[in-house]
Length: 330
Image (cartoon, rainbow, N blue to C red; front, side):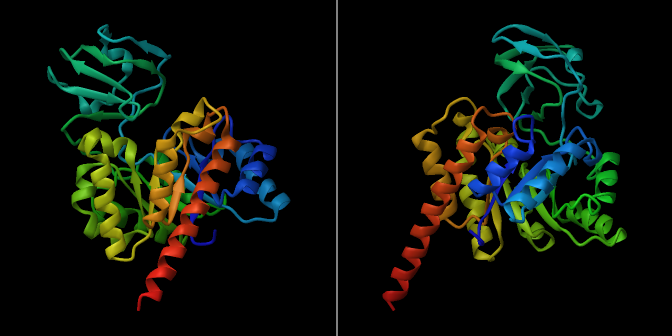
């Protein structure tokens, strides 16, 4: 589908030449490399396999790099089993200095909100929603924004060598306003590298400043994980619809990501709700959709991509039919 970008994500279960060939043959048009805690040069085997897969399939696929940006993450910790109602030593999380000191009753949302902690003091928290916590997972503070630099040293390093590795798009996380994107433009101009910019909307600042963000990006990314943490889980569908409407009114491309086939990380079949999510995202006008953990670490990456593409094709078929029917009315 030339008018719909369909992405997977690199990871342990999505990095061999044979696996990438399967995904491209299934309909994947591009792949995301998450650089939140690594650099481009750390993945030569993955990238070489990606280029070889394109040669074998004779199909060109895009390469997006997802920058570290102003996102907050815990440090390099050993896995912690966070059980509900247990107490957790905050020092064990190796939190970034910019979010301390924390105040009692403040809520910490970890790993896209999968785990929730209630701060009891500047050294201790209670687990409200549990799970296995591993290194470098995202952090969000409920109802509080934290100001951090637009580009880190590793981001600047990755931008400098992006052209060398065949990068076709830059995903900037937690975009807060046009100034964040202007910083990306300046960096790309300094190395004479024209490249698409994908602005991830993941916080209330980005949502409120969407109008000023649009002229400075090629595509808006509705990144529903941290965005749901910022606006509240029950509000995320409403907020997604709001962003979609603004983008459509301005004829601006947008992508929908996060947990589109989350159940297929562990199961060979999706839920009915996931099928509806994909279908309506594409039917409503998304220019791109993306799988993340489903291909990166999931047990059924090829089945997930095949399902993803099949449902998207049905949605595009129905959208085309509806458009033709509307023309017949006039």
